[in-house]
Length: 328
Figure 1 (cartoon, rainbow, N blue to C red):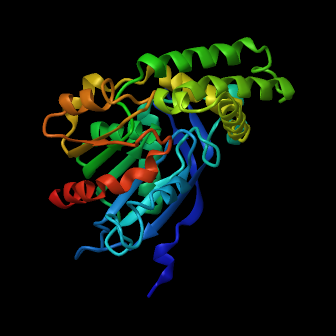
Figure 2 (cartoon, rainbow, N blue to C red; figure 1 turned 180 degrees about the horizontal axis):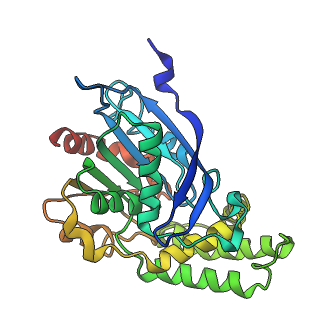
């Protein structure tokens, strides 16, 4: 048995150049990615079982490892039948981003098409035998990209799984991005070439603002004051691994993200998964309207029982996801 198929392999690739929709070109653009599973080939030597994974806001290519309830040796997406490719998105650390490119506040604003084309270019250059994806799984922020794929390249996949995400920035998501950027820009240090302690303090403030939206009201109100204080401090510590320029450009993207008027382009099978007790992606405003707007799509609801980590409860809908994929 080839044990390598059961371990996520990490590699880096550099585009000779990557061109943004606005015309800006970055030379030697880095792409961080991983792959796991078993590629299967047709008579012409093309890979026919490739599934692209798109990660969340705090994640990267390795986030696919958190999906053990779906992607593992004996789960719905088992390592014998599927070949997963996971890419750290444009704009995020490890791949080409404001911080890793050295451009910082001069990094161009990206659009949803840029996020999709960044991944498409990687597939073309590193996985030329993947002429068509079997499917795409998008989690949280990655759901934007997965949906974008199905709109801008509707013939490039058979299915999309849109998990705990949305199709546009509205309500709490828009308010957070706007206020967070105002905090960043008003700090007076964002445009400085010197990364000092005050910038770290701004990162903490932005993190604490995001904390309010990261957990359900039921979960937050179940905590004692001591538990909340401890939780906020730990949450803020995580964001210190990020760069403020990466966060600022991501927020700029969120302020304009909207695919609502393009949903009629979707041809593939679409599974929309809403998650209960969520203050950021709210099923009533995000998942359910998307399902209603895309004819023929399917909808699943995941009850997390107030737990802040929805991935621990994927076992509840594993069979339903399997049935969806098998029906494609």
